[in-house]
Length: 374
Image 1 (tube, rainbow, N blue to C red):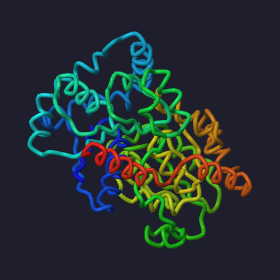
Image 2 (image 1 turned 180 degrees about the horizontal axis):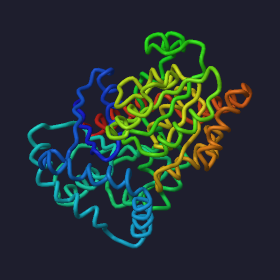
Image 3 (image 1 turned 45 degrees about the vertical axis):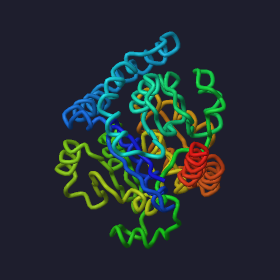
């Protein structure tokens, strides 16, 4: 089976889900090709779209939140959104590529390529089975105007939400958000710390700002160090926010109790090595932490789908999400001192979040392709 995975550089979660599926497909002996489909129109197009998104999220999160709410309202009354018409233009680049490569199935962990393929389908272009993978614990605007053959959703609660927005129930499959097998593998905390050269005896707080380094990283770090207790160590993940990384590196260069990290491919190890994680409620990072079985403190969300993610996790007892930075730090420390509450949270994570989503989706793809060939 030859599967195409189409993503887009608007946040790292979509790529993370795509790479998790590529890993799972290849482990089953299938061929998987993944890339940012906007590059078919030129690298400049991809950079421009990704740049606008990232800068809006980092510098004007409330503007992003307002646009998201407008999108939610517009998707209820519009037959087709401006998002659909913009992405339809990618059809002229994607069609010849698909004709040349001949894939057995297409997987989309992003809305944009799903919109493009929907346009192509409406134009009568023959396409292999198209499977969408939603990477949040809600239904974001405009999924309902796509025409995918199936939609993988994060949890059975999402089915009702998606149906309400107009997606046929028979197309919705609550298989979960796919994460790399590295997060689900059991690993000894001491060995992870030894590999990463982290202190063995300290309580380690992992603070993540997502792929863009968004959120209250600077404020959290400052407050952690201001109130630091003996035996506490902090790992701060800045993502690809190079400006913030350099600024904090300069500010905290003499701090022995802090490790600053930029982009990393070792997030699974950092999660295995830590005692608690502080992260904004991105769908992928939250899922990775949950399948790793780590106590989670959710920090300030990017308004929109991350707000819904936070509500979902708190409602199911999988995280705590105090509003202020000061309270987040205080409640996280209390959680570390309460083994019973930590175990309850870990149990809730295990019961709510499937750790084998990627494997389930491989089986779904195999069945769809087999059915399509008959």
